[in-house]
Image (cartoon, rainbow, N blue to C red):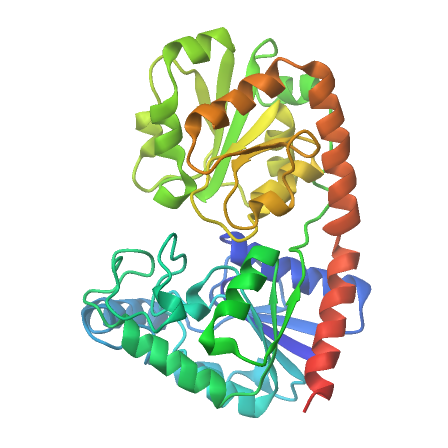
Amino acid sequence: MKTVIINSSDIIGGAAIAGHHICQSLYKYSDVEAYILCGDKTSNDHWVSSILSKKLKLLERIFNIIFIQTTISQDYWLPSRSKILNHPYLKDLDIINLHNVHGGYFSYPLIKKLSMIAPIVLTFHDMWYLTGHCGNSYDCDNWKTGCITCPHPDLYPKISYDNAHFHWKQKKDIYKQSRLKVVTCPSKWMQNKIKESPLFENIKVCQIFNSIDTDTLRPIDKIIIREVLDLPKGKNIICFGASDISDPGKGFNLFLESLSKDFIVNNDIFLVVMGIDPRNNISNIPDYLPYKYFGFINNDIFKSLVYNSADVFIFPTQADNMPNMLVETMSCGVAPITFDVGGCGEIVVNGQTGYLAVKNDYRDFNNGISTILHDEQLRKRLSENCRKFALENFTFKVCAEKYSQVYKEAINNK
């Protein structure tokens, strides 16, 4: 069996890492021949190919800025569409697995044309397939009725004027005319969203957790790690991470605003941060909070060291499907603290695998930090439970078995 995964990137961002791990899983634990076709290639993997050369990519981005973002055709038409349809990876295919196709590299009407080549499995990492434009609708339910009068045109991917209803209708028509066989998503929360959508009636929806390299992302002695990373041994270290810490949806700035000097001093806290920071949010860290910033890390070995240096992992997200970083820190045996949003509550259970705070209640969130930092026995129990949960649910082997089964069902359900 041969499949191609189409994604915005190969290893940059949560959706990219998830797609990359699916490929690794399939190569190692199944007979599926898997490839990735993406908008931006960063790795050196021979089974990954970028849609455009660097020169064409630059020209397309200029075209995107001048025309796409200022017209009704957001991701509706792009010059690269012919490059995708004629790519060698699409020859002799059995199944196509679409992941994140928004981001200015893929014309979504291609879904219909691609489905003529092979049946399609859609994998959801956010809500974009359900909405008129945004990746996360937060508290807006307009996607259930057609995205008429969008209240949040600035949400990613941003639209210059309200054309959300047009795109919602186009998606509905395209899906109806395409060979969409199965939809997969990593959380029951997203599964329920899909079932509520008028765009996906009578399509099978399966939940499959994102996989991670549990052999690399594993518990390591904190004392050794702190010495290696030049971190204070006697402090209570909390770690925050996101692909982009400047993304308002990840809640970094709101978390910083919630911290008082007394809270930091009384809990003897040192902050570790990882992720890109295009808007220099690091400068918002108050003077009374000592910290170390590691930047963006795309290496699981180094990432494992950073996770393991911490006593707790903080993730004050405002909206998320099933964040990779929660899964990764749990695999390292470091308990997470997060809000009860999206799929987070499906893996973070109070007193068992972390601390789940009431949505947007930073007093409760910070109480979770204090509770875990001051109870060594609790930390030990959470650590053991997190690691066990990761090994039972997020290994490459489990992922390969489930995706192989989904691909077979999509091929046989003609």
